[in-house]
Length: 67
Image (cartoon, rainbow, N blue to C red; front, side, top):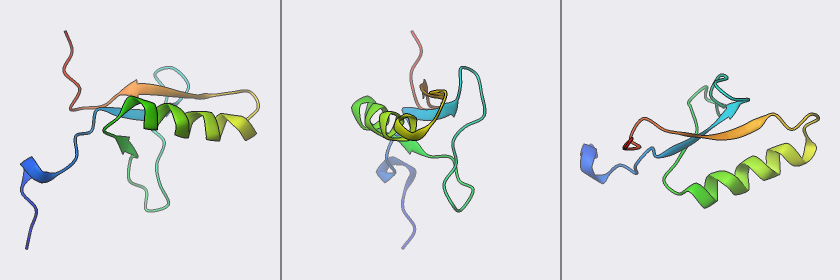
């Protein structure tokens, strides 16, 4: 049974390679989105722990409402 658009998690945040850089993608070449900023920050910190320089940043996703 297909999922309705309303049952999909919101794409509020994402990771990028630097400010305004390309989105971070998974092994299936899909952009990784988060519905929670703290989850996105934890993932960013894990990736930046081994990166030199620290290049990963949290960015607003396409479902994020801009004020």
